[in-house]
Length: 299
Image (tube, rainbow, N blue to C red; front, top):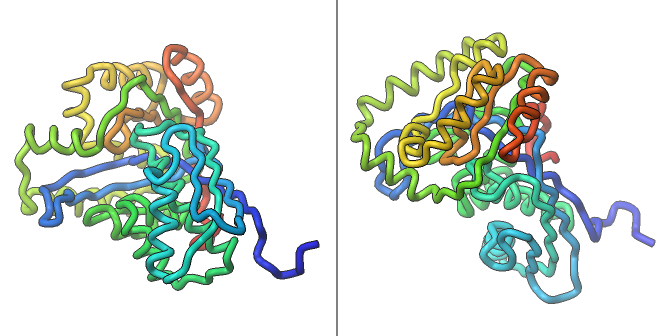
């Protein structure tokens, strides 16, 4: 029988997907990343990360698309081992529902879920700064998932500010059969456009003001934009065609998410979203809504 108050031997943590409602991309930074300004939204489409304490064996990761040490979940566990100077014996099993490599942040969210799972399994009680720094060391999007509410991401994506958005938001996320590398997509952007900080900064200020003034879902629709989309669509027209299909199905606005190739549409309500999803029979499509903010680190 488990002792009351003792850490559990097994935990389940939801790992939600995200969409970039807006994404502005600036020049390349000195560290090799790009300056970005993005309005990011966690949604109800989610993986499930199950973590179980073991007696020995180290860190094991079972995942259908990226098993073992290559998975960001393993990177997160080893990052915490390094920072805390201790070793974990834990098995992670990831039930994937978020499409892999689609610009929806599934791998980053799984890594954040692993951090939360380790905190619970080992009663770690990590300070917020340690949590954020460990997450940031694993990936640019990982810290976002430690607070499951809409946020503005700046810098290389790790400077985060929570924002209030009109709710509820109803979306259809459609995923073409197309795998894109984030590094490749940003390279296309650099090949096609030369942008300075002097040009980038006013765009971010205008978008931030528009986010602050948003009061209705229609105001959010007016913000939807992705600087990377045109560069992907020029090379893979099916992305542009899928965006148009969502607009033809009644979306108030549509855009690629992140570096793609997933495309989302913002709809009037849940019924309109479901009707649009049913029309997209040739691709994987999901009806999703926004997640409500909770306390930092809760899942």
